[in-house]
Length: 373
Length: 225
Image 1 (tube, rainbow over the protein chains, first blue to last red):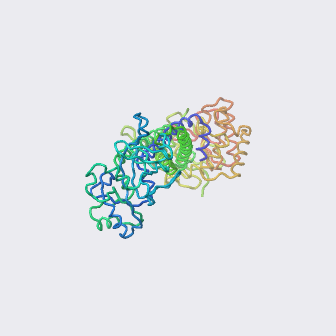
Image 2 (tube, each protein chain N blue to C red):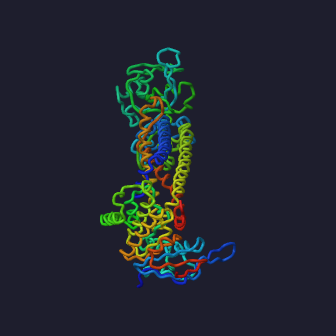
Image 3 (cartoon, one colour):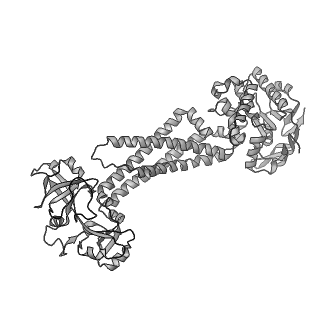
């Protein structure tokens, strides 16, 4: 730290330029991770915020709600299985909400209809209005983002292409599915919407898409053995099975991966060039008795301080950016993720400084003698 | 245990285009504490090689170097660097100070290399610098110092760890006559005062008056003048 800090303070311009580069990299990493997180939340927050541990799908449905069809009667069977503390059915389908009878673009809103049993553990807590009720199946609770589209408590809207109209009785938060706002309906209403076409229920009595299970120690293979024609996965598995989810996340992760790899090179080269510039100085210090470990510590602690400053500025800038981002932008910063990526960046920059450390150990102190500058 | 620095029958070979060239040929020299020895000779005579071997920067091909009782020939790189830190004070050409450290920190750096800096170290460093007339320059950076001041800082730095041996490599190379005299007489004074074994390699004949003995080096062999 002795050498590291004194040099930092003495050559402020040089090091501020490195900090600027590093800040930009860190900023980009955080923004990208926020965007990735925002997108995956938008795609699957209904699942992610659901208080469930395992999901029973139909066999061969690849953990996808839209490919799976089961009978609600199975719920009673599942509940008896070992380690299952609760089970509840769920259905999902995509629809378009029509605001009034207009044909304007802005009056058509895509929504995801999520059918659940009112009062079950699948029903999210409302932030406004009243919860679902089995007695009035046309009353729904919807994601609060629909307010931005002009929907209010008590509004009734029609579903495009159906005869069904729904009334908003409550709002919930952070409930989106397939990138659109979720509309929770009682199971019976969902069936009317999803299976309006004759035969689309494949003759299954009381059809549902999947059965959600609670119970920490559930063994999915036991469930599948006991039930016929089922495929049980964890909640995370169900999220992965959502159409397009893996692909979307994959693209963001790949960008992040490349960004981190490139930043490792950029930072490594910067630190290396700085070290090369100081070859003679290090030679002198070695001649007067500095050990490799002393000089390596100086380099590493300097890189550590630079990285820390840059990452902190990067985080501040990211939160600043998040504050002024347009509302519709799928951007969601999570403290956990910010911490993880900060540590990743710190580790990368420290690793990249090892090239410089290697260089130091090779400097010959003899060079310091007999050299006139 | 013998104090000071003894080199006996030192030979150093370099490979040059398949030929073995002897840069040093059976060189022997002994410097006692309090003795200031000069080594003169034309460039290419092996002065630098000699100083590098005496300064634990280079290993001899043959012969032994005994520094304050330690035999350097058998030491590892790490031990040699420790010897350089604790037993040897280097004064180099053009002072070679670390550009981003102020005068006081230049000295404390050496202390830092061997561990913590105590308040005693600090007051010793200040005393040393004051003795060398740098009392007003403690917080100055090398770029703010004159050539003579830089060289005096380097002298102070070489004494900070209280080493037994002082090695000076052309300490007057970048100085005018007045400053050169000033610097060498300072080295001579400190060497006498603190009882160090000191060797100065120089081609500056004007400086020899300060030295107790003068050796001449020519084509790798050394002789007392």
